Image (cartoon, rainbow, N blue to C red; front, side, top):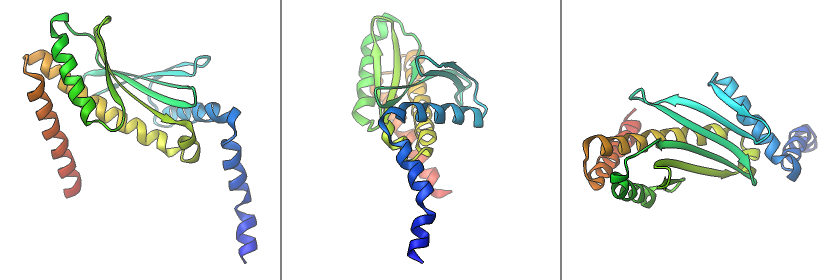
Amino acid sequence: MRAIKFFRNIPGKLKRMYRLTKRNRSEIVWNELIKLHKIFKWHFGLYENDKYLETIFEDEDNVVLKFHYSVNNDRLSLSALVLPEFDVDCTNDVMILSSHFNNLLTDGVVKVNIELSYVEYVYSGDLFRYLLYPTEIYTDILMHYSMTEECSRAFRTMINTSEEPVFVFAEFVKRIEQKKKDKTIK
């Protein structure tokens, strides 16, 4: 009986072994990423030669957020503009708020480009994990979207209200804790 189970699982094991070969890793994850976008009918722009995909989502406040996904160097990189532009006078506050986020975040990093005056949230995962568990691509995209949305809201609040970064961050933490609490209640 065990021999039958073993032989029955051979096609699945061979498929998984094929997915793990070095030369096919990026191609397989790239195709999974495209397939995921097509399944959910997300609108996206595709740059096949660079293995780069760009898509746009709206957050709860109807603000359009740009997302960039790329496969390179054995990593799937997810990045999004959190704050497309900011006034030079706000640079210190932007840097302070981004450092608060980076002290709390375990997945990804908030980056500030001072020269071009924008803020982005970047996360990258090892292709090996996505090869073993293709659904992790979707999970990471959801996590990345959720954190981008929250970071974007916090930065916009700070810019629009001129509120101190520490108070904006405290509101962010309260909102996240409330979401966690609401999730456990349901």
